Amino acid sequence: MRYVSTRGAAPVLRFADTLLAGLATDGGLYVPESWPRLPHGVATLADRPYADVAVEVMWPFVEGDYERDEFASLVADSYATFDDPEVTPLYRLDESLWLLELFHGPTLAFKDVALQLVGRLFDHELARRGERVTIVGATSGDTGSAAIEACRDRDGIEVFILHPAGRVSEVQRRQMTTVASSNVHNLAIEGTFDDCQDLVKALFNDPPTREKLRLSAVNSINWARVMAQIVYYVRAAARVGHGTPVSFAVPTGNFGNVFAGYAARRMGVPIPQLVIGSNRNDILFRFLEAGDLEMRDVEPTISPSMDIQVSSNLERLLFELYGRDGAGVAELMEAFRTDGAVTIGTERLARVAEVFAGARFDDDETRAVIAAEYERDDVLIDPHTAVGVGAARACRRDPAVPMVALATAHPAKFPDAVEQATGIRPALPDRLADLLDRPERYETLPNDVDAVRDHLLATAVLG
Ligand SMILES: *Cc1c(COP(=O)(O)O)cnc(C)c1O
Image (cartoon, rainbow, N blue to C red; front, side):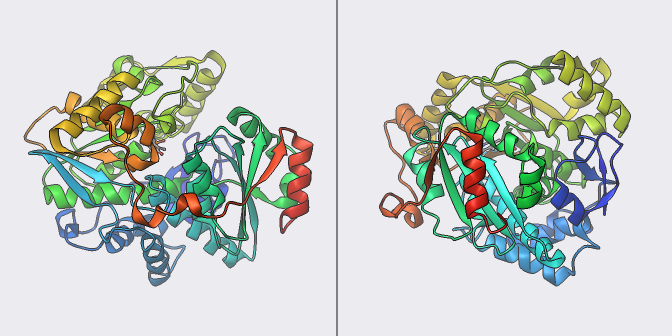
């Protein structure tokens, strides 16, 4: 498979090159040149192990860059780290509503599903090229641990994650700082999350440092992350529907997860409806209502992984809506950047509405959903999952079509919100039960780019 940029002006690449490139040189995102069809349909996949289905679904996207056995072994290793043999088990909430639990990976959130594989693919490709990279990233608490678990113990990768000192929860900090791997470095910065992000940007914008350390990122626009997420849509649709239609509801921030559902549909999975749940950062909800994209300030909520105003992966859907016209998308994105607002017009909006629906929940409404699901079924869900479940119940079009709501984080990852809503504080799973007793390792540094740069150059293998 070859990959083209959504803005039409970057080189066409093969899979392994898009993996290392991330963003395209024209500022666009890589997408497959065409959508492959599932070779044997959906129903045949219902009873096969997760890793088998994963190879079957992803193979057309990577073919030509790997031997099939080699790829299958990377996939098998990735999903062996999950604590449930089903990897992404289903849980039935009512007659036609299911939860798809995506939180059985090392850090209890759905990003592990993609990052466990992407870390291994990265390392494999670097080894093949005889190269190394230094990954540097900033986290407000949630994504740092998934990146660290993806990169730990990999020979070709060293990872430095900056977090704001004293401003992440103890569980989130410990999920990062208790990883005892020599290629993992945590930096507590005396500042805010925005300061951490600015420091990372400053490092990337400093060519001598960038080149010396071979700075890299595994960010949410990487095609390989979307690709790995297509798998659980296909498998859940197969198990619930056996080839008949199944809809999905997805708590959405950057649009990466729900775009994977769209990709599954393009591959032939019968998915009539994709429901988007938003918190108060509701640019996508407003987009579905009126066809406008309008930037506003980010507001903090109890579902922090969705506190995003510019959903970068939406550009991949816009590329399809614009008939794969890269120049048209480039013009739209440029107008969005300069004016802070654009519209796609009523005809394109009508095409979006054929598949997508959306609902929005503020924090009180989110807690009400958590409480209602607990009363109905004794099930504890985290605030992100609650936004998706609430949207599923609000937007279900046809009660005869089953709907699968994606459970994107374990309730114990956001215990305060769950306890406020239900009175019950969810416990960490057994394998993390001793998290609060494990030794921590991190360096505290001032909010100062010279100090951070000097530290990296002094400690990194490539420094
Ligand atoms: C990242 C994240 C989301 C949002 O997913 P996108 O792909 O950014 O739309 C939802 N829930 C949780 C728990 C997350 O970590």
